[in-house]
Image (cartoon, rainbow, N blue to C red):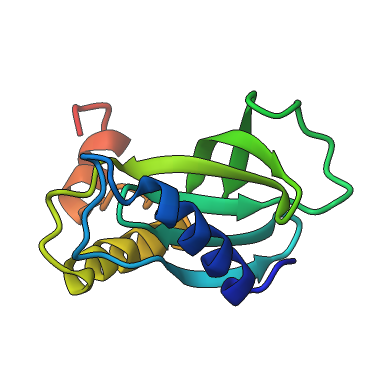
Length: 149
């Protein structure tokens, strides 16, 4: 698993080429939030850049995945996320799912960070099992007597 610092450094270098483009928001900086190892999945976090916000996934080295440019599904308890696979000399194999692009709706880093933290909260949330319908005593008797519930 690459370090948060290594991934951020890579994207800061990419940012030097992006800086003149209209999609670049100079009020934002590269920041990888929530970067953590997830058992059986690899590592995962939300990457903020001045031009996009992505779910950033580094699958385990032994994972069998399609080739660069193809799509792969990241399955978590909160749901399935379709990601595009990338391969780079510095970062190796990784995948991303676009969350926002361009980033012009974010006036500052704090706003982008708040969005990224909410995404992390939702992505890492455990799905809750369906709750059984609340059965009142009256409904129970109706059902027992063959009536509608």
